[in-house]
Length: 175
DNA sequence: CCCTGATTCGC
DNA sequence: GCGAATCAGG
Image 1: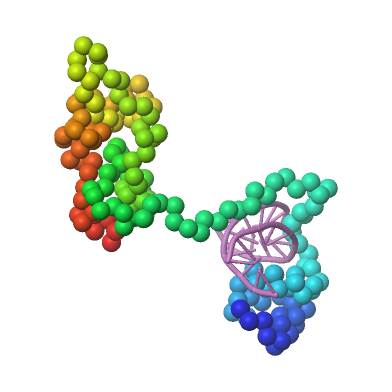
Image 2 (image 1 turned 45 degrees about the vertical axis):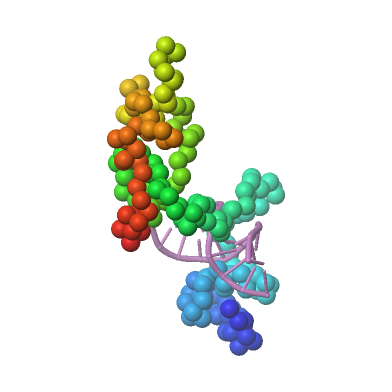
């Protein structure tokens, strides 16, 4: 925004007329925050504020609203191979498509699955057990599949088929 | 919810 | 310097 002398003059006038910051913003076609910010910088007389902001200077805590600027998820470009889909997506929480996409493209998070299923008894060969979750996590009946996992994968054959989908086939999700 | 003005702080 | 985000009262 370019604060030309004229605009500043108009701001001053409207400010003096006692218009609200939002109204001034509407007339100058700028945001109310711009008006307030500029007025503050110009040392214009403060309006009666509804806020009382200095209770003995003791400001509780302003944890610096950390704005997220960059992407949080790993780039999709690296997903040349079949992308693991987080299993156990029960009732999709009525969220937008973006939420769904984010969840489905997120890499598997081991911590989320808690610990892997208990290892098979020593007598039997130690075949990695399928860690596909069954039941509602946190409930007593919750358990992992436990069937023999496929070689190199955390799931058994049927669950691996569900868990891994090709990126190519996910176009519809992105749309 | 809507409105208000003030302040902070990444850019 | 700018102003969105945030706060906080009505």
